[in-house]
Length: 334
Image 1 (cartoon, rainbow, N blue to C red):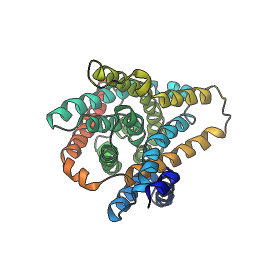
Image 2: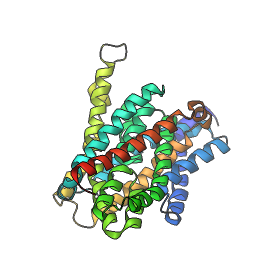
Image 3: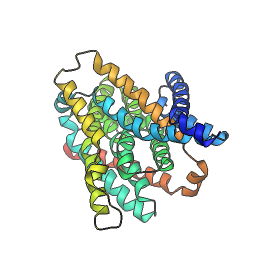
Image 4: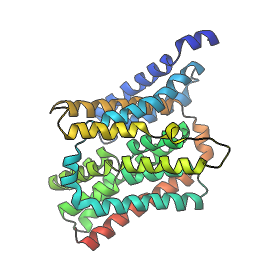
């Protein structure tokens, strides 16, 4: 296609391609809810991008989806979150939640350096494992200016262990004779994707599933302080170097939007029906954004990255799971 024509089309070809992949992913997600639309979106995107020779005219729209749509999705998701509910129901798990988050971030930093994994990729795997999978990765990626390949690899790594957790956690919970409450806290703090948390929790018992869901909701709010922390770190890292990065340029304004939407929902500004619609819309937008990420991913670059990021994800996941169990044992929450 002529450059002039491509310029006139702008972002629309890439957006339409992302919408098409996202639609297919959502349909598959309904058929296989354990995997979910988000996982299918990025996998289908990667498959299409590497099986076909995509036109360069798609690039602007794919970049728009993987950045701007991603940020807007985070804001919309905040509208379905009640801070009051999270505060009252998540207090019991606060120590375990914060402990596992700290462990995930420390392991990502230390093991990432030991395994010589790029800083951005290690950070994304760490926050994805420590908080809530794809949503946390989505929030931090634009702050650290991660590449699409890094986002795709981090999400794929995190979701790989999510799926394993759905099978492994109930088995270990039964072997350790955990209470419903104890298992719910464990699942809610050591499994990151919501669908996997719910699947593991309710496969153990109804009470465990309810607890796991509430704990997971509380854990999601950690996106805000962690994203702000990365923004502060990014500003300090660039200070005194040839790279001029101001706080206003990299400040995650969309995270404040997420927090503002959650506050509005908490005070009842959205009524009773709208929050659920916002949650559903946020999940759809996440699928569109992740489809854009997948379509912009080059598998050859992922192969070059090697197996070390997967090993990092495995070690962090195991560390978080063991930390959660250890803290629960100390607090006698089994």
